[in-house]
Length: 156
Image (tube, rainbow, N blue to C red; front, side, top):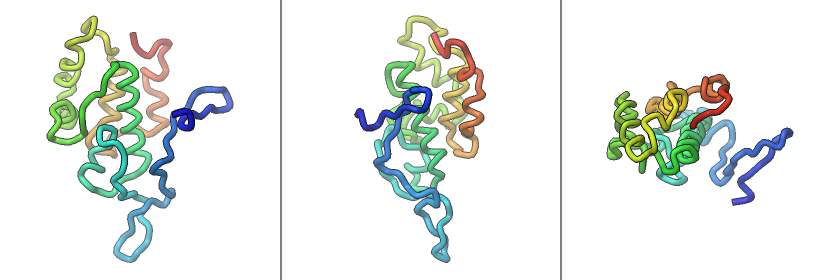
């Protein structure tokens, strides 16, 4: 959608979707009725949702946005989604959640032109961004300083 594309001051394209935007205070409240800083709304496209949303847990907006960004990035590079849903029912996501990244990448490389289709830097980045534990996902600063983001050519 054209309304979801933004340009920064350098005319770099930014992808945005404000359909489920929430206040920075979040939407979840504690037992005293105070905002916790977490969100609780389970809306969106299932295949882009972080596991904590599927598990109906309160979540940090930035962490689930980073997760969804990893799904988009994977699709841009691979040409297909990494999994159907970030849940134990999905074999591809289960491999990531169980720290079996080699199994995940072996399955996704099977129909690619070469075994090194995905760079090691890309693999590392995607696995970190799709981590089951949201606290293990990189921050935006961490992400921008990864080898893949700093490389001359991110992937073949």
